[in-house]
Length: 236
Length: 305
Ligand SMILES: Nc1ncnc2c1ncn2[C@@H]1O[C@H](COP(=O)(O)OP(=O)(O)O)[C@@H](O)[C@H]1O
Ligand SMILES: [Mg+2]
Image (cartoon, rainbow over all chains, first blue to last red):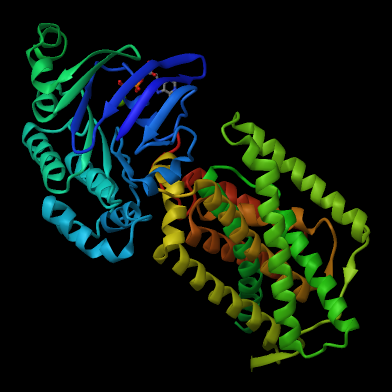
């Protein structure tokens, strides 16, 4: 479904991605782990064309989307819940969800809204509150729900567990599993919280310094001693 | 009392005009964090298009005032919309992502270019015009035989301002376009990720500001009957002051700031010396900024890093 082929991305002179290859197949949950500064966020953002890949190709459903304007990707079926949540702070929760549905068929709006509210009942209680007043966990729920409102076929999630209490993290990972199973939505998940992410994922990649260093099934990576040492022990 | 009321009416009229121009500054600042220094000149162009269209209509023998006003309004809006769009396209968009001062310098350049272009095309002398909307209502006469008069033109200006403000508020707060504009204002990258065409939304914002400036240009033309290529500078500076006073980035703030500055000017000229009215205006701006640096209705939090 998504093929990232030899992608290089720069911030000015800094080369953040140094030839990355990643494949996400339809129906999978694929996770990308790596320490802070490895380039995970850059990869997700490069898939969305912001920043743009300097070299290499990004193929989505057989079409080259490397040079597509960012705002057209959501119409193609890619939505992202970005690092740091990035909800619109001075819009209400309802308006944030409306924004998520900007390019989707308005006929589905009410159903999708109900689905989001069923998944995250907190959002329903606060739907007329400004998003900036929500707690971190609630903002994360909103960011995911906003991405879901776009009815994507590929959902990109950047560190949805960052800074959240373990119980909230559980809820969010359960939600991701449900979305993948019931909505048949493909998920590409970036996490530092490697243990949960690898347990959830069908397959995983490890990124170090702008390069993919390891790939395998979730179970394989979980069992890999190098990974245990670098990303699991002392962490979760 | 009667004199006071009369100044209140005059001040509100003037304030409406400043407020309409101020909205253009505040909207553009909100969405791209830049003062569009050419905005005052867009207003000036709106005034010139109005005069020219009136003259053409007069030459064609169209003297039915409501029809003439509608035609002039449309012409002024269309032409300034094109100007506003082009200015963004030519002078600002290519510099997006460049260093912060670049678009500012570009803006000042555009301002000078527009002034000179109009000066060359129209001449440096003032353009006079016959009054289009004459007469008014005497509200009452006090014991000193002082009439409180509201002219039909003042009614026209205030009603049109209220209608435009209501329309704008509706667009910004209730429509998809308004939500997209607010999204770009709050997080441009994120807006792009959910499918907002950011460039087009910014263009639309320039056009909306320009259209309001055109209406203000028409109002000034009708109110004062004379215009020249330089009016954009002073009115632009006042309107910019209004936007800062009200809290730059805030729509109600721009309108409030405009009205306040109109009132300050009217009352200062009436009760003190007319020569110092601009000093008074800017003095009050300084005072407000000392005690409320974000302006009267500005948001206190810092968002842009
Ligand atoms: N906007 C930016 N400008 C310059 N350098 C950046 C920017 N964003 C990230 N980087 C750099 O790119 C590298 C990868 O960052 P990032 O993709 O955020 O990593 P991760 O998400 O894995 O923590 C880091 O060295 C970081 O400092
Ligand atoms: Mg990151």
